[in-house]
Image 1: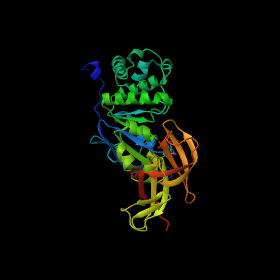
Image 2: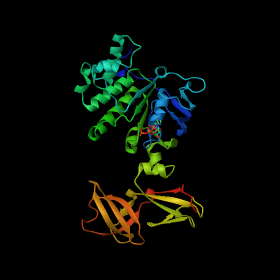
Image 3: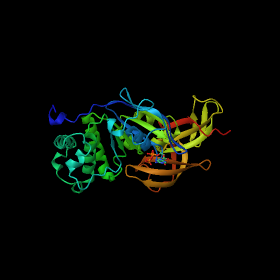
Image 4: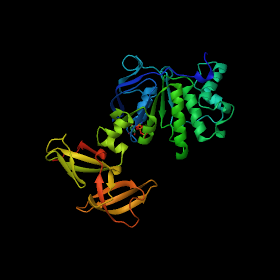
Length: 361
Ligand SMILES: Nc1ncnc2c1ncn2[C@@H]1O[C@H](COP(=O)(O)OP(=O)(O)OP(=O)(O)O)[C@@H](O)[C@H]1O
């Protein structure tokens, strides 16, 4: 091996392309034509609710599951499709499971060596130590898993997955087993290690905030379809539809029919020049976009419920006219404890309008 310890263990990041992947479990169509590319060296977060097909897509990439149709291409080489179907160990793709379970009876270094079966025992141990060094745990090589904290065990699992230097590393909910206080620091460490190893990583999560914290890009899956791919900013500011918007923000949603380029909602009229008259639209207003004014010049409303959340308060408000309720997140302390009547205004940037999928007439 050439190079010193600090530069050792760098992977040759690969590009992985999913081309029109379909998958069925019996009669259930769980992936419906997913086309997606993870670029070399990027961290791509695969985000979606439970059952959207995230794990199935990873299993297909790893070669544990064979897709019903579609191709997988690593760099320019088909690894699964009409021409080829390489077994998992020949794909150069690493997989780190949700329950990163380590073998309790093996030392840490032997746990990491486990994925290096093609090497001699001695070379395997050396490579395992390089991988442990990368995650800052070389000094624990001769320990056993139960002596390590949850965060350290997670890093051992990461070292094990990186040790064979996969071109692409797949991680299925890698932080779900950690308690919430540990999660932030382990996530930051993992990201730093992935960057240093220059690995291409696909990270599955159902947590939009986690995807925003980790991903260079995010691919949002819903019902087996790819809904939208982009940066966190793209998905937050320009969601493709109501599903994507609701994944990234808490929303008040009102349905309205456009008349004269305006949609009238209980919170007032919203200009919608992009929609023709008669179009049924969903007007989504972020909870964080409903503000309490310091004067009485806005829309009158009454506080029905309020919950203190530290920096913010979550409020349920009844609009004076009609029987509508809206949710708002406001700065804590802005409204006096006993105050009931308030005046509302909206920030334009927190109003998102989509053609309604429920096109009833
Ligand atoms: N082996 C299987 N046999 C039959 N159906 C399956 C199998 N594995 C998954 N499914 C179904 O396929 C769909 C997609 O599952 P998948 O585990 O890929 O979703 P997911 O987005 O990873 O969900 P989660 O976040 O809950 O793990 C689900 O409806 C699931 O019930």
